[in-house]
Length: 461
Image 1 (cartoon, helix red, strand yellow):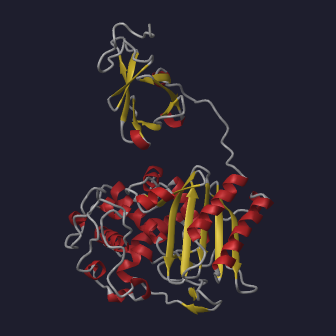
Image 2: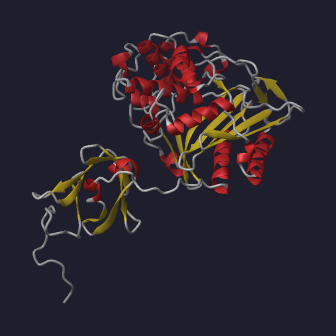
Image 3: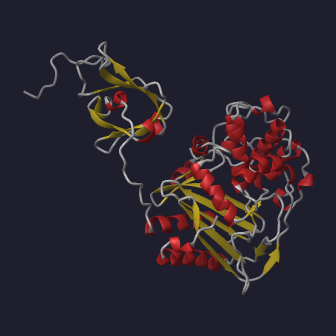
């Protein structure tokens, strides 16, 4: 549901309009349409067009290209959450005979399976999918370009395999499964495999002259799960809310958080640009904030969806030209404009409704060797560990319900934090993945590995 654009300040709305106006003019796009989401609601829509008196709105379909991959990834994660498969399963276990069965499902999701970026000739984006009726036609005789699992190498055939996996396990066409399990529950009524009026036409703009020609809109056939979909800024705005918050009818908040977590080893260029890839989602570090989403392109169309989860702002940008406005960059800029002009107002602080004395006993200052850390009790029974100097490892830990916590971030992700108690029930020390945290530096009353010098601390004589 689109809310009033008055929710953004006039200066913010003008800055957003200016950004897309520059993008459309400099990118020489026949049209460009955008939307911004804040607080789970669409708060701004904008459009620029070369046609007088006709401005596309949030109901006009554009082709979204590889943003389709994020939809496909959601379907795979649903199968995992239902226990139908494990992300570590080799493809061969569920879809035998492909010739690429050694690749795991997680590697396909993260583009680390070593598969080729494209299918064999002819150029698949500009030719009908009927030319590639079988998976073997998509993969070719030599499907691999790199050792499996060693590097991130974007692969459209990899997502074709995931689409075939979904069809095999659901016993229905990929698009039917998508409509039933994702589009209908989320109310994405203007997202479809084939264009539905009103929709934009795709154009190629001549690089050296202000003239255009129409691009073909091919049905991708087998490769549909990699880039087939058409959608609108209205639908993608709702999809962005889902990717930020989760929806138990489709996928839990924990599972969409997993999609947003880096899962592929970045190469040197990705490290330099601050980019990574999760499970069907791109991850970017721009202007000091982490953004997640996906870009998309097919002949005649460019698309970008970006979410600043911490800022609670998302943006969608769609255009109908083969090359021109950098849709993902423009979307990231729209997020930045709102986040900087109108920073997120935090919820009021409120005390907890219940006190868990066992947790209260372990919060406070702890030492890992001689480095001081603070352990704080945060919402939901979680705890957060931070170096008091501001330098060092930090992480949030999820409560397991048995007096232990599991790390969620960085170095301590997946590691177990537990309080080790003395015979009288008091806390002796914290064990974090075998590291001992004590109340005093090298507390002689705790079993510090290697022991504590019996003469204690001393100066220089």
